[in-house]
Image (cartoon, rainbow, N blue to C red; front, top):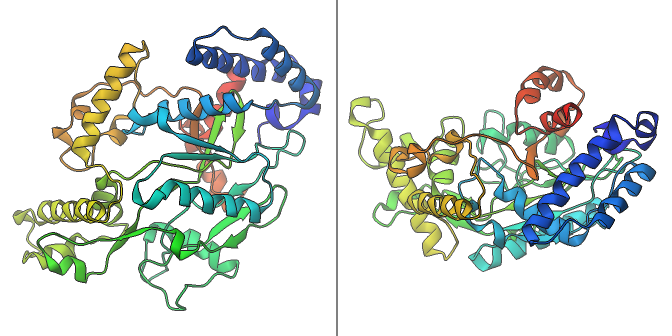
Amino acid sequence: MDASLSSPSSQRASPSCSIPTLLDRAAEFLDLFAGELGRPVPSARLEQIRREVESRGAYTHTEEELQIGGKVAWRNSTRCIGRLHWQSLEIRDHRDLHRPDEIFQALVEHLRFATNGGRIRSTLSIFPPPDPITGEAPRIWNGKLVRYAGYVGGPGDPEEVEFTQRCQELGWEPPAGIPGHFDLLPVLIQGAGEEKPRWFELPPDEVLEVEIRHPRFAFLEDMAVRWYAVPVITDMILEIGGIEYPCAPFNGWFMGTEIGARNLSDVDRYDLLPRIARGLGMNPEERKTLWRDRAILELNEAVLHSFRDDGVTVVDHHTASRQWDAFVARESRAGRPVHGDWPWLVPPLSGSTSSVFHSELENRVLSPNFYYRDLPWQEGGMAAAEGKEESDSCPFHIRSRRRSRHKD
């Protein structure tokens, strides 16, 4: 944890370095906060923050600051094409929860609230920031709240093999005793200062899943493929005004291509395209037939059909592109430039038919924002050391944000 947020003693030893930088971040955020509400910056609030920082090395956001900060963090997320709806984000303040069991219960409630019977609500839950003395805070080890296990040399999601191994080391086993393709992973929660995380199983009736079927090709339903309805991201750190929230899960809803053109199609994920091609009567060995293009199109149609038929919120990539255009126009009217990470915004299917494809965007990371973190089980190890240089240079990694704070 960065010393400017976690060690008041070190700050007092070098006030000219640490205290002003955190205060600068706080002042920048207060300017933004006031601008969002159309009112002047309250000088008394900045003075209150200054006293807090001097006394304990951190400060506490008000409920209103947290609401504005969380919503603007979504607006600033340059890898998200769905930012048109940033003002509708529901924010749940859980800064009073510390124990893994009570955090897990709040996560279940988050999932239930966000699922909303299929009419998905964008939701952000914020748990305590690091203790200013110890630097410790609760955190979730999962990358996503809902994901399927992956087994070495076996079925499931290859992207989750390493995490599944961590779960098994802690005592978790596949729900049916035999590894399957769509076994719900447990949630690993590590309490502040605790050496190891505890694992909790999501109640199956709280996890809405969609069985993937095609409106014309029955063989796809026979493949018994399914996907979860709500994408809750749990491995990013929310930063607002210099304060970090390492446990801040949030969700929107799926764009169909995330599932049909990536999760179920990528060769290092479920790699379903060869099976679908064979179901369509095509030979995956004959590349000239463009079997991948036909298979990925039919799989994406199946995903959209299935979600919509079940009454679950999903957006197709063409609608998402039009919503992006509306977002850009709205931000322009508000006098705010729009930044974006082009490769992440262009849909992975029919990209050139999207207006984003033809856009020139500056990939500038603003605060508040969400940042990547190191894998919890690799921190301090050889893998973390090998990846440090790469994450240091990544503008979306929290380490890069901390480094920039010291350069201000």
